[in-house]
Amino acid sequence: MKLTLIMAAVLTTLLVISQLYFTMAKTETQPYRVIKTEKEFEIRLYPPATMATISMDAKNYKELSSAGFKKLASYIFGGNNANKSIAMTSPVHMDINKNQSSMSFVMPADYNKESLPKPNDSSVVIETTPEEYLAAIQFSGYANDDEIKTYAGKLESALKASKIDYYGNFRFLGYNAPYQVLGRKNEIIVNVRWNRK
Image (cartoon, rainbow, N blue to C red; front, side, top):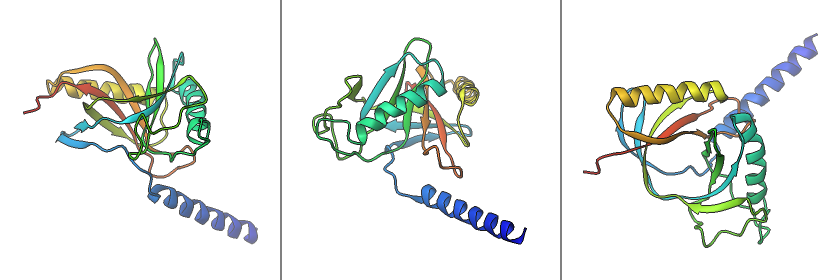
């Protein structure tokens, strides 16, 4: 019994240490500038970014995150014409809707559309996003369809209350690897029309 308790304590300690390591590990994050901070959300300016994107008929988070991640991970782990590994960055972008859903990996800043290797899978598309103003609301824990819908609704209500004009789909941003338990970060974003003055 005593040995079991000691083993459990050791395993718990190792789990906490590994989670702290993964939480603090340096992963390149897509840059943005905060334009305005409100109680529930931020308005951000995102510069153009190069992304690898997969589009699918997935109708929910689970369908898109599983199949989409496999295809995009295959590309960055050497499934390209140069057999080259590309560093994982954060966040992972997901646009889940009834027509066509998509998942995107942001490429490291030292790459552009021309310098990236060509994907072996033709369904993986390399694209450069335009500069955009986005509203973002944050939540923690593991994401699911209910949480995504709840926070999209909260962001929509907050934008309406603030009389901020938004357009397009509400999208999900996931910042953490599936095995990271502590310190998880998720966001819902949507495009906004913002006065540049």
